[in-house]
Image (cartoon, rainbow, N blue to C red; front, side, top):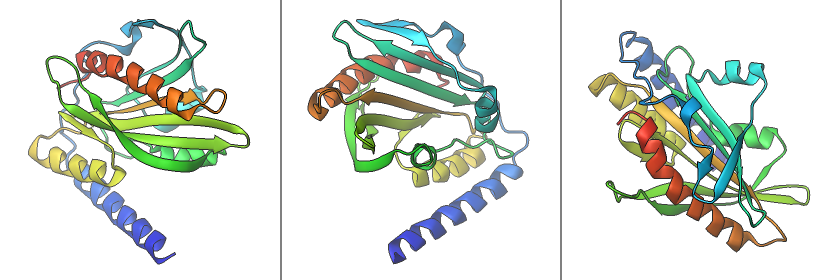
Length: 215
């Protein structure tokens, strides 16, 4: 209980500091995507995608500058839902929303939390950390990968995301960033295969995203 209160206090302080710093940076750069997400490929390897859409009220709440929401499937009956929200500027309340807030609100419980390392692919070849979460609602289970990407960084921690946001807003005068989330349903209770499928898709996705997001 004490640890929970401490974490809540730290998060509140970071949020306040973020708003204070960003409020003084009204002339920070507003970088656009290299290419609009409207051109994002609907076929990635053996995966074929179909665009999905949120309610207009959701987009207004999120405050995103550009977004892609697409459900990809392959010939083996596997499905992966991709969502990427890009923010040109995270000032005046237009901050990235964490799934740690919205997923429980939708009835999904965090059963397991960990991290996985992905290869960024050529020419970068970095090992990219992503949040690896097992979710459950009733008898349904799904695995979610997510991370924050922008200004040359891949971040998994909500706390570090806010800290780097403040640092970069001052040193680089940039607050552009993307939130990337992938979700796959666990079929027949096989969590291992679901995770391996997500990892395979993510390795294809990361180089593609780097073509779209500002470096």
